[in-house]
Image (tube, rainbow, N blue to C red; front, side, top):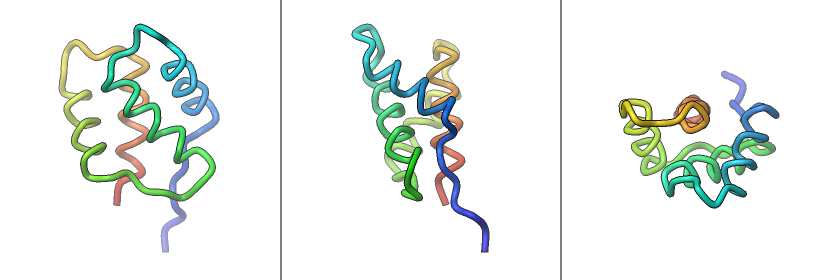
Length: 78
């Protein structure tokens, strides 16, 4: 059986910064909340958040930090 994925400390720091930023988009904050919740537990990504992450990765307007969070969140989806 595969070891459950967790968000790395670097991703958790990025998530924390995004959540504290008043200018972060609702999408970024949603992904940040999911990534941060998965930093110390083996929770898996919900289908709704996975869809949001996939759309963020496909968008040409997504920031680097949002793409980092989206990628982390998607790796934690079964």
